[in-house]
Image 1 (cartoon, helix red, strand yellow):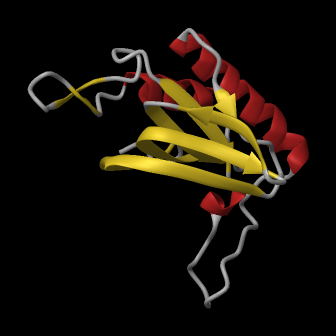
Image 2: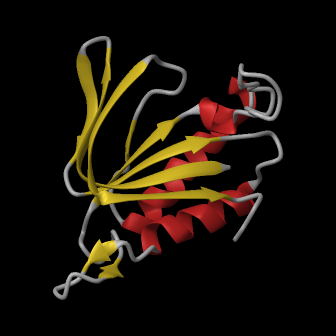
Length: 150
């Protein structure tokens, strides 16, 4: 699983001109799923995401997690995160999982984050043409890949 984590003051997802989900201060998490992803990847990433200390404390130091600030999380599926750009100028998405595998993994990922966060995780709609709006705070953006734990 590949994720792009963005610290936001607000974020929303609009589908067909209607806001589906919106959050205030918290994290926007874009997630791309591939066939070799397993429940262990969900566990590792979700624990990292909710405990990652990227929010400022009273001294302006990134020392607080989304849990510490009682923030919200918006998770949006994004198969293009699995793009391979090794050859040519047109990205290949062959590594991106098909719906049959990706949707259950996406749902497990959202459920796990919600359980750790102790509140509902807001989501986009898998496979929909979404418009994602965000106000990146910092800007603070973290990229993680469960297949390449750095």
